[in-house]
Image 1 (cartoon, helix red, strand yellow):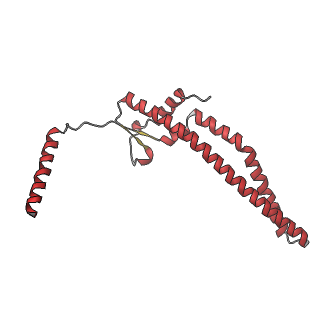
Image 2 (cartoon, rainbow, N blue to C red):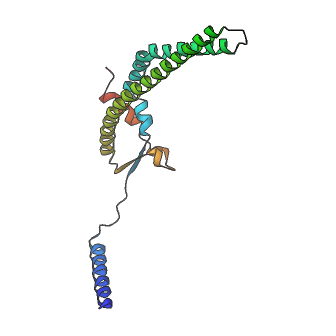
Image 3 (cartoon, rainbow, N blue to C red):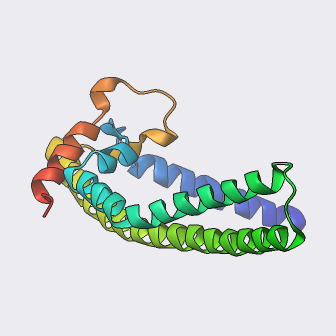
Length: 176
């Protein structure tokens, strides 16, 4: 009985192989393009404009962070100067330093969270729009598959559509 089950399974598998071999289409060459998706999005006029706006928007916070870092450095210098500080003055400097360190940490965390959130929103939208542009380019050129450069070991430069994708994006989504 064990042999019969294997015989039946081999018969089924060989039948499937024969059928699929008979119905398989002849090999069709696949047309491939390569894209550096990260560069394509980063080079768009829209993203450059957004990046400049983000820098302007968060410059005051970055200035606050720099000022706090300078204050902390000044406090540390005073504490390490070797001059005789009164116990009250030393205690006051340490308390001020602790307060400024907490404030610096909060500002850094808030800045990072805000920047990450905005960048994710912007890059998510730009990525979706770039995908649509790449799809249109691929269809226009009869390309079957577009591979991101990050997963490619070698390709001929003629296959790279990054610049075309960036140009297409800029035409479809000019900065406002």
